[in-house]
Image 1 (tube, rainbow, N blue to C red):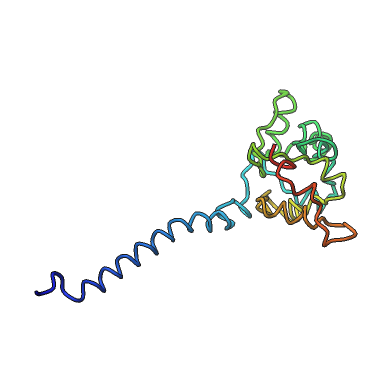
Image 2: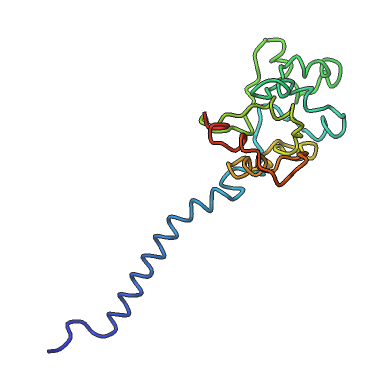
Length: 192
């Protein structure tokens, strides 16, 4: 009895099935790979703000410390965005006529906050407290990068779970860097 299909159809079926498996694997893996790239997690991409603010000028050139503007970082859950009055403490005397600072002056005199865009925004299911980290000696640059070199603010690190767990397992400044702090790596420490 003759064969129902020609011999080459077995090879064709193998190629089609192999291609289908490869395509399925690619479709499943592609999002997992993409989210780990700078594009997928918006790392190293400047966040446009309503007022041009150059961290290089304020931090590097003028020596303004992070905590001067973000005063909640030492004790609060959120570092906070400075009130316009903090900006006007200097800019009420310096660059008073600059058109770049017109929104800052308007915010100050109209008593309306500037709608700054967050650079880092953790998911709602993640608990993070700036004050705890700052009081334990974690430098701002550990998570925020070299802000003094940023013309526009951007995410320096992804702040994904791996990044946080690596730091909690091997905290900077700990006398025994190989010892994991189990209380800091339990799920409920961050997922509340």
